Image 1 (spheres, helix red, strand yellow):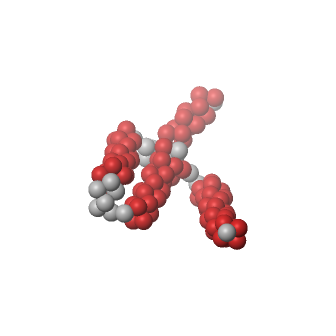
Image 2 (image 1 turned 120 degrees about the vertical axis):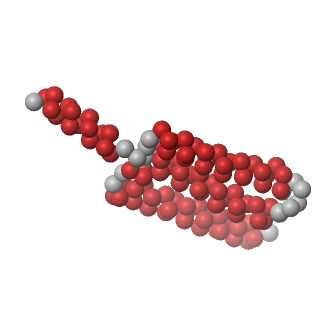
Image 3 (image 1 turned 30 degrees about the vertical axis):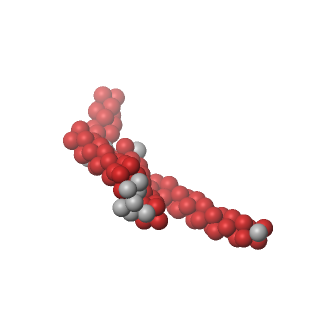
Length: 116
Protein backbone atom coordinates (compact mmCIF):
# COMPACT_ATOMS: atom_id res chain seq x y z
CA UNK A 1 0.00 0.00 0.00
CA UNK A 2 2.77 2.42 0.88
CA UNK A 3 4.65 1.52 -2.31
CA UNK A 4 1.56 2.41 -4.36
CA UNK A 5 1.30 5.86 -2.73
CA UNK A 6 5.01 6.47 -3.24
CA UNK A 7 4.76 5.47 -6.91
CA UNK A 8 1.72 7.70 -7.46
CA UNK A 9 3.42 10.64 -5.76
CA UNK A 10 6.59 10.11 -7.80
CA UNK A 11 4.55 9.89 -11.01
CA UNK A 12 2.65 13.12 -10.20
CA UNK A 13 5.88 15.03 -9.64
CA UNK A 14 7.15 14.07 -13.08
CA UNK A 15 3.84 14.83 -14.75
CA UNK A 16 3.69 18.29 -13.20
CA UNK A 17 7.01 19.43 -14.71
CA UNK A 18 7.00 17.27 -17.82
CA UNK A 19 7.45 20.35 -20.01
CA UNK A 20 11.00 20.98 -18.77
CA UNK A 21 13.02 18.57 -20.85
CA UNK A 22 16.73 18.90 -21.41
CA UNK A 23 16.02 20.24 -24.90
CA UNK A 24 13.67 22.91 -23.53
CA UNK A 25 16.27 24.00 -20.99
CA UNK A 26 18.84 24.41 -23.77
CA UNK A 27 16.31 26.27 -25.91
CA UNK A 28 15.60 28.76 -23.12
CA UNK A 29 19.36 29.06 -22.47
CA UNK A 30 20.03 30.00 -26.09
CA UNK A 31 17.14 32.49 -26.09
CA UNK A 32 18.62 34.14 -22.99
CA UNK A 33 22.07 34.06 -24.56
CA UNK A 34 20.74 35.70 -27.73
CA UNK A 35 19.02 38.48 -25.78
CA UNK A 36 22.23 39.09 -23.80
CA UNK A 37 24.31 39.22 -27.00
CA UNK A 38 21.89 41.81 -28.43
CA UNK A 39 22.18 43.89 -25.24
CA UNK A 40 25.97 43.76 -25.34
CA UNK A 41 26.02 44.62 -29.06
CA UNK A 42 23.88 47.68 -28.42
CA UNK A 43 25.90 48.74 -25.36
CA UNK A 44 29.39 48.13 -26.73
CA UNK A 45 29.00 48.89 -30.43
CA UNK A 46 25.88 50.86 -31.36
CA UNK A 47 25.82 53.40 -28.52
CA UNK A 48 29.57 54.29 -28.55
CA UNK A 49 29.53 54.70 -32.35
CA UNK A 50 26.38 56.84 -31.95
CA UNK A 51 24.34 54.65 -34.28
CA UNK A 52 21.56 54.92 -31.72
CA UNK A 53 21.32 57.29 -28.78
CA UNK A 54 20.83 56.48 -25.13
CA UNK A 55 17.26 57.76 -25.31
CA UNK A 56 16.54 54.87 -27.71
CA UNK A 57 18.91 52.31 -26.17
CA UNK A 58 17.55 52.55 -22.61
CA UNK A 59 13.95 51.53 -23.48
CA UNK A 60 15.37 48.69 -25.59
CA UNK A 61 17.44 47.52 -22.58
CA UNK A 62 14.36 47.60 -20.37
CA UNK A 63 12.27 45.58 -22.83
CA UNK A 64 15.03 43.00 -23.37
CA UNK A 65 15.63 42.71 -19.62
CA UNK A 66 11.92 42.14 -19.00
CA UNK A 67 11.96 39.43 -21.68
CA UNK A 68 14.90 37.74 -19.94
CA UNK A 69 13.14 38.03 -16.58
CA UNK A 70 10.05 36.37 -18.06
CA UNK A 71 12.06 33.39 -19.35
CA UNK A 72 13.95 32.99 -16.08
CA UNK A 73 10.82 33.15 -13.93
CA UNK A 74 8.66 31.07 -16.26
CA UNK A 75 11.04 28.22 -16.94
CA UNK A 76 13.88 28.10 -14.41
CA UNK A 77 11.66 29.03 -11.47
CA UNK A 78 8.93 26.74 -12.90
CA UNK A 79 6.24 29.42 -12.64
CA UNK A 80 4.92 28.51 -16.09
CA UNK A 81 3.94 25.11 -14.74
CA UNK A 82 2.18 26.40 -11.61
CA UNK A 83 -1.47 27.04 -10.96
CA UNK A 84 -2.96 30.38 -11.98
CA UNK A 85 -3.58 31.44 -8.36
CA UNK A 86 0.08 31.12 -7.48
CA UNK A 87 1.12 33.05 -10.58
CA UNK A 88 -1.26 35.88 -9.69
CA UNK A 89 -0.10 35.88 -6.07
CA UNK A 90 3.41 36.63 -7.34
CA UNK A 91 2.51 38.81 -10.33
CA UNK A 92 0.07 41.23 -8.67
CA UNK A 93 2.39 42.35 -5.82
CA UNK A 94 5.22 42.73 -8.33
CA UNK A 95 3.06 45.02 -10.47
CA UNK A 96 2.16 47.07 -7.38
CA UNK A 97 5.85 47.42 -6.52
CA UNK A 98 6.66 48.55 -10.08
CA UNK A 99 3.82 51.08 -9.88
CA UNK A 100 5.11 52.32 -6.53
CA UNK A 101 8.59 52.79 -7.98
CA UNK A 102 7.15 54.78 -10.90
CA UNK A 103 5.10 57.00 -8.59
CA UNK A 104 8.05 57.61 -6.26
CA UNK A 105 10.32 58.40 -9.19
CA UNK A 106 7.80 60.95 -10.44
CA UNK A 107 7.48 62.40 -6.94
CA UNK A 108 11.25 62.69 -6.54
CA UNK A 109 11.44 64.77 -9.72
CA UNK A 110 8.80 67.06 -8.25
CA UNK A 111 10.83 67.63 -5.07
CA UNK A 112 14.00 68.31 -7.05
CA UNK A 113 12.13 70.99 -9.00
CA UNK A 114 10.69 72.51 -5.78
CA UNK A 115 14.10 72.74 -4.10
CA UNK A 116 15.66 74.63 -7.04
